[in-house]
Image (cartoon, rainbow, N blue to C red; front, side, top):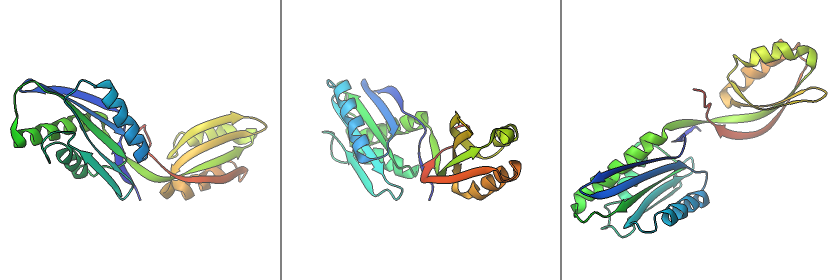
Amino acid sequence: MAYQTLRKRAETEYTEKKSRFIGFAAPVSNAEGALAILDGRRKEHRSASHNCFAYIIGQNKSIIRYSDDGEPSGTAGKPIVEVMLKKNLTNCIVVVTRYFGGVLLGASGLARTYASAAVRALDAAGICTMDESARWHLRIAYPQWDKAEHALQSLPVTVVNKEYTQHVELTLLCRTADESHVLEEMLRITDGKTETSREEQTFYHPWGE
């Protein structure tokens, strides 16, 4: 089952009634990774008034955590996580840091501002779909390599590793839905002289898209 997460880490900043709001968003693979990022943000912004956050983990969003970090209940963490859920995101964290500027925003103003900071950070990070995929190892004899290399340029695969030994050894990533087509094409191009082995089931995003 595919899921949506973030392409990269991103940070944005804007000012609302003299308070600075720094939004930070990042992809993570587990709760430990989210907590490590949160700890880093807290250390980086020790003097901030608040470091409010939300993170969602798991293909089925099995872990959802958020915190107002001292802001009035329901005005920070919940608006952040609601933005993430609305965008159908998982395996990511958003931290919004506030440096208080002396002007109170009120509960509704705070909720809108934290939600806006989350949206800005998420938009900067970008959203991608992680597809159910497989990692394959291919061994191709040198006489067939030129044809195979040319074919790989048009096939829906990502070459993650290539070694020239007694054969050309390749590690590929491809969507599960594309496996049969890719393997059939490689065998056809090389006259059946490609050795293949499936290494693992995984998820990935074809970054060139």
